[in-house]
Image (cartoon, rainbow, N blue to C red; front, side, top):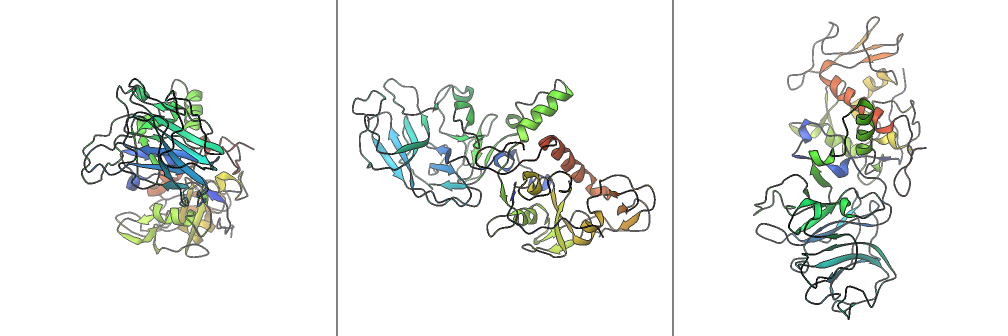
Length: 422
């Protein structure tokens, strides 16, 4: 019997692929576009939330998962009535399992027409300190040892002062008015420019009292969660003028991830797959890809279902230190026996000498046996082919296309900073 793809380890993984059950108005971009944290980042600032009640102003940071950020300070500097005055200082806590931390509501402390947000270390100042005595936009005092990151907002009025780049204001992202907030995307890179940010005036979509309308070019978010942008903006850089251009630009759009542990006490691939494969009518169960069987969720380890590498790890990434090994865009929860029957055989059409892996009838799909191809999976040990049953072929085909375009034959390893091909 070929080996299964189950492993117990501490590798890293991405968040899950999107299916029809998870489809929304936009992609959860952090789900597919971030690498290991290269230092701490300011990822979102909402300072003048639209709608009523207007109580959703906050600052969000991103770092390594579960990182202790208490040695840093979020410092807010006035840029209008008293330029350079420290309006607020917030001590961050611990990042969550995805690497995010949110200040929670800072209303009304963020509601200012012009201000600067800095993430600093070694802070020694106090709220009320005036760091720009000349009101000329140049700091006369720097009560910190280093600035980790920063972003500024300005309405463009005369006398407005900001103390870091980028400065987001009228004209930012093509909009004639100043934003009420912005989300940084992508946030895995080491740059911090205007192009890294998306307008976020409508961050409270779905919250009580929200009355805004999401339009192209805007982002929205839940504090300490993923940033979402619209589908057309996500694919804005894709060039379909030729096959080569299409492939290379799609690769560039999807080549980075947020990684989660393969197996860990925090959010790992078991948690992700249990959510991705969740039974549509019973949150306590999963529906596996090969057998179409319903199983009570398990937290990990050896059980009736396990994690199938639809692109076998033996074909290019045998170690869980390789990024593709734990990429949940091609991992599926599958019946352990069927996973073993498939082994590392390529997917294809089983023309002769085929052994049948039957499916269960659930929700109008699967069931029946004895007729090729029917609703069954088929394996051929002699020709080394595994044919997936008809209802799940599209899922597996999309996973293979993703892996081919995403990795282009390379093997990536997790590291500090953006990942690089090895």
